[in-house]
Image 1 (cartoon, rainbow, N blue to C red):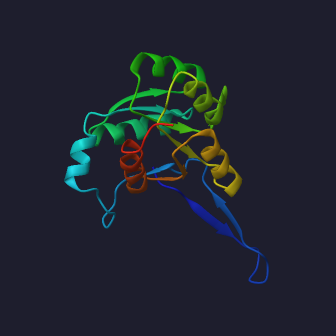
Image 2 (cartoon, rainbow, N blue to C red):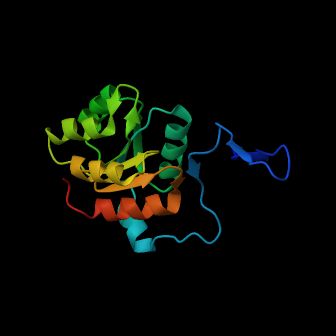
Length: 167
């Protein structure tokens, strides 16, 4: 899946209208030149459990697949309710959570889960303003990654988060 950007202008003196396809990818795959983690780090992460919470099915599936290829044991949920259930069943090492969910927010989910015990969590969202990052930090997320997801950046955030103390 690729993003499409188009432009049009009535004349050389008029403004240009740019449009972006609504089917643009929310996850960018690895590409040449992107850095990789050292083998010792990736080996220590192999088999760790991650709960992916994302209400957009294609994004949830793609992110889960990428993480599984990296050696993680992944479960996924599409809502706050499903994430609560999956978390209690699987007790994952890490939660990667969208902020805007169909039945609540990732911030609320993180708060509910924290009442059950410490949770390592990374926020992944289209919301990327300073106040959104601050709200994620205040909610206890260790990292906040703005979509579209750069897998290399996410991989480094996962390594950092898994070696930090749960909050």
